[in-house]
Image 1 (spheres, helix red, strand yellow):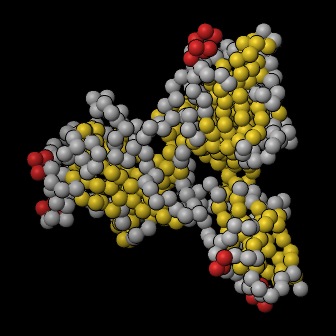
Image 2 (cartoon, rainbow, N blue to C red; image 1 turned 30 degrees about the vertical axis):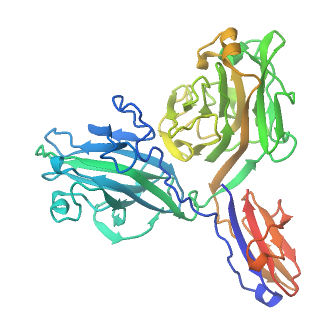
Image 3 (cartoon, helix red, strand yellow; image 1 turned 45 degrees about the horizontal axis):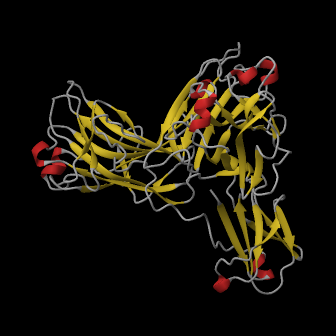
Length: 537
C-alpha cells in the first residue's frame, strides 16, 4: 500500500504560511472488498462450504438456481432456528481497517411469495467497526426487512431489493441515531465486519430471505487509516541487506537435526539459494546433494539485527507449489537463547503445505498452541502474490490474508512460569524460509518430492513492512528567515520528492528525490511554482 501527500509552494510570500493539498491518498478501491461475495465459490452445495465466510446460527444454505439468483448461479438462504426463543442466523466477513477509513455497503435481498417472512422475523445487513478484541465501536444497518416493510411495499416480494447500509445506530442501546451516506471507522478500529442477520422470533414463524451480490467498498482515506510504515525492506536493490538479515546454515545438527521437524534441506547463505533481483527477494530451494542432504535452501532471520514489539506486520509474497515444499514467514521471541522454544514464543504469520495451494495457515506457539487455516476463494491460490498480515497488540493477535481476517487470538498460555500475556509481550525477530520435507508436510519421501516438485522452487517476497499508528503522513511548510522548511513525521518510512515542471499543474513524471533519511528539508524559493510530495514506502 503506497501513500502520498503533496503540497505546492508558489512563491516565497506564499510559502510563508500557505499549504495547498494536491493529492491525498491513493484512489479508493471501486470493487467489493468481500471475498466470495456472490457465493459462487461453493461448487458443491451439498457440502455447504461457504468459503470466505464465518457462519452462526442454524439455518443458512448456499443454494444454486440461476433462475432465482440475482446474478450467476448461487445465493444464500437464511431462515430461523424454530427453537422457541428469539434466535439469530447469518454470516459475517471481517476486513482489515483503520481509523478514518470510509466505506459504503449494500447487498441484494429477496423474499419469495411462496416463503414470505412472517410473524416477528426480521433481517438486515449490518456493518460494525471493531477494536482488536472484537468490541463494537460503531454500528450501521440497512433498512430492516419485516412483515410490515413487506406488506407496505418497502420491500416487495418476488423481486431482488438493494439493501443499502445507511442507518447509524448507538452500539449500546441499538437506537437509530443518524442517516448517513458514508460509513466511518472511528478511533481504535482494527477491522470492519460485514454481516448478514436473520432474527427469528420465538413463535416458530416461517419465511426466508435470500442474499446475493454483496458489497463493501472503500470510498475514502486509506483502509489502514493512520497506520503508517515505520520499518520496511522493499528488496529494491541488488543485494540482501546484511544490516537486517543473517542466515541459518546446515540442518540443525548436531542435537536438532531436521530443525526439530525432520526437514530434509541443508540451508546455505549462497546466492543461488537467496538473492535480490527485479524488486523481489528470491528464496530458492535446489535439488542438489551437499553435506549428506539432497536439497539446499535458505532460512533468513533478523535475529540480533532487527526486532519489533506490537504493530501491523505484513509480508507480500508468492509461494511455490509442489510435494514437500514448506514456505514460512514467521517470527520468534528474541529471548530464545535464554528460554528456548516454545518458551520464547513463535508467531507463524503464514506457512503453507504447498501440496495444497488452496490454503494458508497461521499459528501461535508458546506451550499453548492455536491455529487457523485460510481457504482461498474465487480461483486464487498461494502461487499468486498475496498479503499476509499480523495485527499484534497487547492482548490480541489478528491474522489476515489480503485484508481478510480469519484468525483472532486473545488468550494463550506459556510453557514458562510467566503469566499471560507472556511471551507475546516481548520483542520478536523475523524469519523467512523454504523448507523441504518434514512433519508439517507429511514427511514425503525424496522420491515423492522429486517427482511431485519442479526444482528450483522459490518464494518471491515483494516486501516486509511494519506499520504503527503515527501522526498523519503529511507535509508542513514554514518560513525560516530567507529559507523555507518542509517537515513531516520522522518515524514514517517515506521519501520527499520535488518537481518544478508539471504538465498543467498536474502530477508529472520527473519527480526528483530530495530526502530519504530525514524529516526536514530546507531550501530557498524563487519565483514560480515548486511542488513537493511524500511517498511511503
